[in-house]
Length: 242
Image (cartoon, rainbow, N blue to C red; front, side):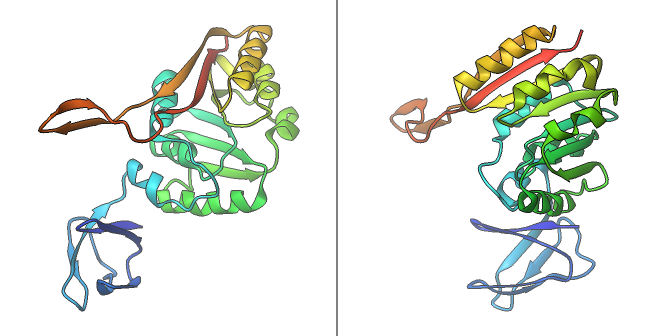
């Protein structure tokens, strides 16, 4: 069970029994450490152990590319209502941020990643996230597996892949009646392709959103949205099987 060890402006993800060497000293994590315990390095720096929570995964899972942002994960979960007991078919695993979040919500996830090395990292990340019993990571293209997946009756389909339209066209054969579809697209053109395919496939409740988020700055001069950073991440399209 991985825990987060936190001190002022520093945090590390460590296992019980693990040893960390840094400029703050040598930290030897006890085998019986529990959330809330304080552990001291040989130089006297005190770390507090914390239970690993969903937002921590975004910062501490091993990355194989740009992960899905928390704002997008939240929208996917909010608009699909994926929860405990649901079976989710996912593709474009990447780092596994979305798959791990769905698994931590209690869903059973079958996810496909075309890059075998990325898939192996994602499997390790599912172990770290504590959801390896609920998230199965396959190496390969979901399009090649569609014939085997038809009729499985998944509750939701989540996609972050360039061939999303092909998979969306098969959604009526992949999902139960009322099943939800969520597609992340980095470009408007691919979003349009997904929408047109969803219409042709007879899906309902089709809507696309651009995700934008701005942090707020508060100081003695006044309050306003931050001028730093880029607020746009991408586009999300949602639909439903009749």
